[in-house]
Figure (cartoon, rainbow, N blue to C red):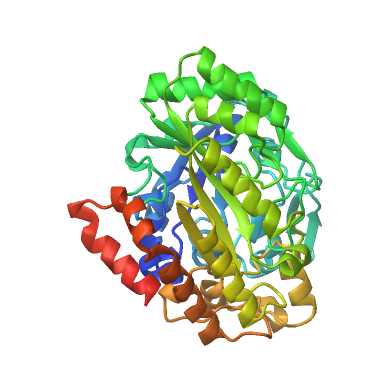
Length: 482
C-alpha cells in the first residue's frame, strides 16, 4: 500500500511578483506529520515537495505516474489552488485506480467544486492526520471514504456527501514530523529574509494548534481553543534539530506560541538547562507578553518577535476582533525593546480593513513609524477562503470567489488573493468601499517607502545586504517602494 503526499507548485510568483524573493523555503510540516502517522501504522509513504523543488505540473504528473501510488494526498492552499485543480483532473484521467485526496483550508472551502469537477475522490476537512489514516486503512480493506468523519466525497448519485470536521489528534501522542523524507538542504531562510538568521541551518517547528482569538480575517481553525505540545517535548525536538541536524535557528509556526505563558516559561527553562545554543523566533500577541517572559525568552535564545498590530485605529482593531488598542500595542513593543534590545521586533500591519478610510491608512503608517520596530510588514487585506470575512463578503455577493454557475470554477481569480499585490500588475480581489484598488496599492508602497527609507531604518537593515544579493534587494525595493 503506497501513499504519496504532495506539496504542489503554486502561483506565488504571479501573486507576489518581485516580493516572491522574500519568501523563505519552509518544510511542509503538515504533510510531514501526516507522513509520520501513516508510517507509524505500517504504510509506505513518499513525499514530493514540488513547490520547493521547482517542479512544474507536467514533470510532477510524470513523477506521480511512474510511482503509481494507491493514494495521492495533496495539500491545497489558495496560492496552489489552481495548480491542484489542474493536477487533480490530470491524475483522475491518467491514474484512475489511484485515490486522490485533497486537504488543507482551500480544499475544504471548495470541496464541492473540486469533487464535482473531477479533481479528486475525497476532501479532508480540518486536521489531516487521523482522517488520512482512516482513509488509508479503509482503502487497504477495500472500502471507500463513506462514514469517515471529516471527509467529503461523491455519493452513488454523484452528489457531495460527508463533511464535518476530522477528529483532532492528541499532539502529545503524535510522532515527530518525518523530516527524513525530504532533502533538508533545500530548506532555510533566504538571503533577503526578514529574520536575523539566514541560510540552510534554519528550520520550522510547530508546537501547538488552534487559537483562542477570532480575528475576522484569519483562517486558523480550532473552535476558539488551543492545544499544546508539552514543554519537554518541544525542547526535545529543538535539541534533536540542533545536535543531530546542525540547526542554528528555529521559527515557531504556531499561530499563538505564547498562548500558554507557563508552558513558554518552561520551554525557556528547558532550553537553558540543556545548554542549547540555537536562536529562535515566533509570532507574539500584544496581550501575551510580560517583562518576566520577555527576559526569559531572551535568555533562552529568542531573537525575533512578530506582533500582529494590524492598524493604528482603535475603531478598526475592534471591528476585526483584535482585543487591544493602539496604545496597548505601543506599550508592549516599547517594553520589549527597552528591556531586551537584542530581540528584533516586527510589526505586522494590514491596509484596507473593512470600513477603512484614507485617513485611517495614513494613521496606520504614522503609527508604525512611531514605534521602535526593526521591521514592518504592510499587507493589503485579503478575505482568504476559510476566514469569517470571506464567508460574510461571499454571502453578500461582494467577493469574487471564483465559483461560477453550475459549480464551475474560474481558478484564475485566486491569483488576486494576495496581500502583496502591489508588487504585480493585478488588482486586489476586494477593496473596502472607502478606498479603491489604485489608491490602496499606492498606500502600500507609501507605507513601505516611508518606513524603510528613513536614515535610522536604513542603518538598522544594512546587515541584510551582501554584494551577491544586492541586485535582488534593489529589485524588490524598487518594486515595493515605487
